[in-house]
Image (cartoon, rainbow, N blue to C red; front, side, top):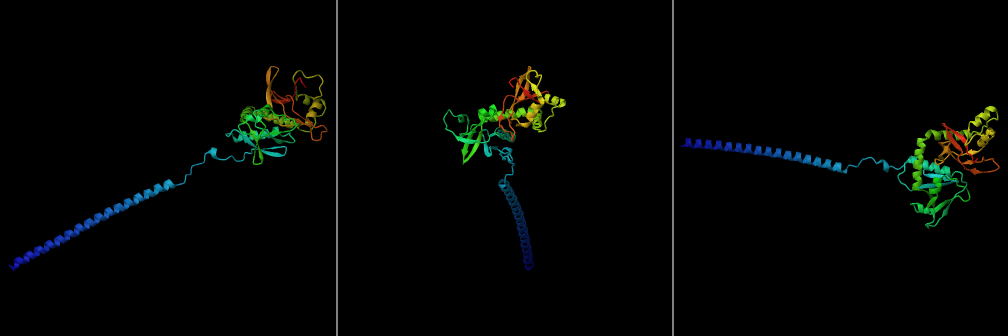
Length: 308
């Protein structure tokens, strides 16, 4: 009987040990799975967090896009002209103007007014009869040269002279139609660049103060520089006339000073520019008459039409 009881106790102890071992195994497996799941969750959380940070960083990153060319302010384009020792800013009615065109307009306006000794700005009314009505800008003044001759090209005579007064300063308005005329003039300059370059060289040669000697060779040199509308006169003081030109101040022509005429059935370019007396002359004069120079066979010549 005692032996049977001991056997049951041994079996019971064995079952208890097996149950404890099984419980430890199950609990360890559960802990491992929970730790693995928690690790996955932590890794996932880190991934999501990192992704969110990247998204936030991309969203808040400053925009490094380049500035459009049209938004970059122009640098080095002077829009001021000097007239009779006074400076005036130019106000363009057309906004979209290339720097090259602005330079052309500034230089040519200053050139065409370079002979004026004095200039003022006359206040005007806004009545419909005033020429200021042709402007889009509200013109308040008009350029007044007094009794001086203007000698403007027809383009400036039609579309130039309006002034706007702002903050105790004056701005000369460049009419939109005048801008279009300058655009045409720029195309003309590009198409006839060689002719215009030779014109500048020709004016420079006339400005050379070295006189031509009144010899047979000198007379032939002078004669070759003249072009007559009709037949050349039998007797003409070529040397004296050429030396007379050399004593004058011949201004470089405006882009508007060129045109074509009919010469012996063909078109010929002519140019009329401003001529002033030398500083030491007793009689002062400024003149700009009929076409004075003609372009023939690739050379500029002193042109004498029938009216002269």
